[in-house]
Amino acid sequence: MKDSVENDEIVLDTSGTECPIPVLKARKLASELKKDVTIKVIATDPLAEADFEHYCNQSGFEYLSCEKSKGRILIKYKFKKQN
Image (cartoon, rainbow, N blue to C red; front, side, top):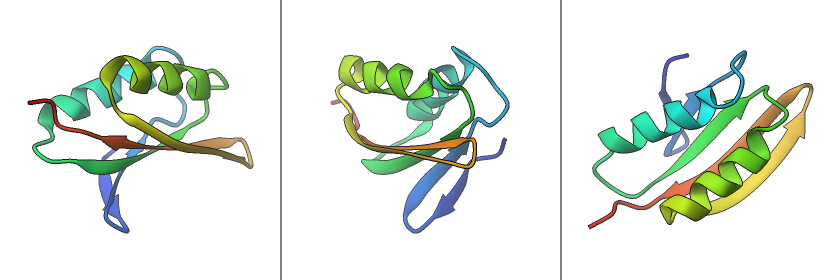
């Protein structure tokens, strides 16, 4: 589960983990970021979509999309550095 950069997006692979681990990993990543970027989360937890919608709403991030394909959930959101 290593973070990578793909098409100017940070990819956070949380495959194989369940709630609350994907959001906790995203929160840890957010604490390390220094600029506004797009994050793509790869998840397999069926609750990830709702969890990330809530996380983005509570954190002031922009929830962009969610796609489901072949047992994977791809969630994109815009991280916005808090002043």
